[in-house]
Structures are given as C-alpha cells and as structure tokens.
Length: 63
Image 1 (spheres, rainbow, N blue to C red):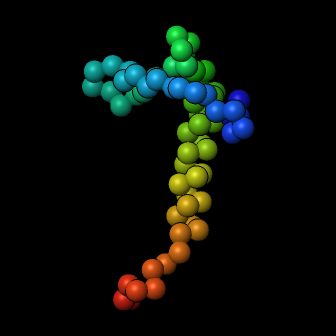
Image 2 (cartoon, rainbow, N blue to C red):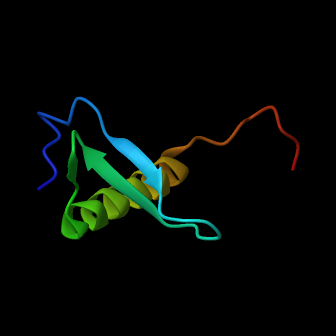
C-alpha cells in the first residue's frame, strides 16, 4: 500500500534485462510487489496530469 505519511527511505531500481525497458524495484533485498509498483505508477501519472492542469499560463508569452 502506498503510504504518503511514511514513504520508503530508499528504493533501488534495477533494469530488468538487456534490450528491455522494464525496471524492477527493491526495498532492501526484497522486491516490491507488482500491485505496489502499479499503485506507484498510477500515483505518478496522476501527479503529472494534475500539475499540468494546475500550471498557470505565462502572461508574458504572446498568443
């Protein structure tokens, strides 16, 4: 479960293998469960989308 009040101190990301774009996450020697990784991913995407929506337009840029 994703706990914003107590995030992990350190997460190690390891490339899944040659020729892939897959990353595996570890906390200590333990792999992070896939359901937790999916929650992290969804939260990350939502934070980016929210930031893009809330970002003010620059008034000095000409249209």
